[in-house]
Length: 448
Image 1 (cartoon, rainbow, N blue to C red):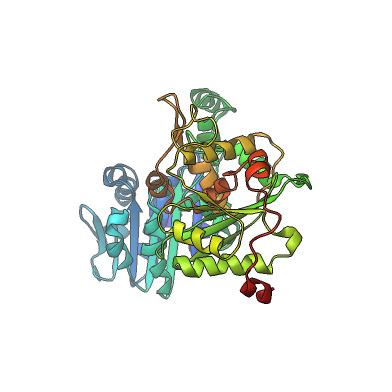
Image 2 (image 1 turned 135 degrees about the horizontal axis):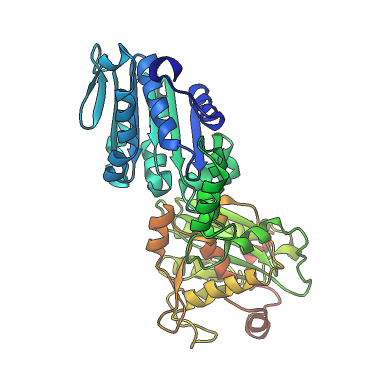
């Protein structure tokens, strides 16, 4: 900055640059005023000036936004360069290349979309540096299927940057998923880190964002994720409270219930939720299984579970291939309930459009009791905070699964499985589904 641009960096901007210089995966969340576009441009030019065999890619969800922000700032920095650096590069509309070796020392910007994952997957160079700006708006497929390949190169760097405006998605998981976040270097900028910070401007800006209790203040001033996505079915504060609650004790006279959401042998997962009254005990997840294989997995798990911890009932989504799973478990003597998502509500039909809407809303009511406990699993938390609903028709309607899938990059399988545990209420179970033991088959006795 001093030698090439005759400028300086703020302490937070230095932290950002040092993280980019020394680490492979950097995730930056920040509010307004920090100067993230400024420091991105600094790192872009550092990469081109200080490396050979280098490709610097600036990706984003919107080409007009890239041109008006990141790329514009990069071009402004070129105008400020000291000689002879400014004469060493050719500037084009979407590409900047070193005149001496334009094929192996260049930077460019391009659209990041799941529709062009194959072209993103083809980015390779010895020094392969990638920035993803406005990462909350980029499809998860870009990160998982497109950019994962750059780490096969000798010296890769992936830096993802955004205002933390969503409580879901890949960018959120780099901060909030315990497993994924452990491999990322985190840089967090707030409004107070602005190099031009002054109290008067802060007061005006804080008021314009609605003050300390507003969602926009949390995102744009504090540079932190919102408590929940807009119009979420379950408020984020209830989800967080359930994760932290260590005092939820299930009632002894309330049965354990399992909920099974079968999936086809594709990308989606089959998930089993285990709930005892006000506490979710565990989740099991399988992928790539056909109905028979999934049925066998659940049967084996049931038999391996101590008798006093076995479920009184296993609620299975009997829609489509799930009907075969439910049928298998029933024929093998396990206590099962065929919960058809697309069926009519079984309780309060005047309130819900379908059975799925009913059990999802009852899951919400369960959280609202504020005396529940769930595992600290990132996928579960993201799904719970992401599913939306509509009640403008006078009845509650949960959004279609494809809408949630588009938003978070996968099906909400954990939420589905948990909701299925509410298929049968405690009262209804006692009156209609209170098996004392499953049907006995000779093979089942020998298995035990």
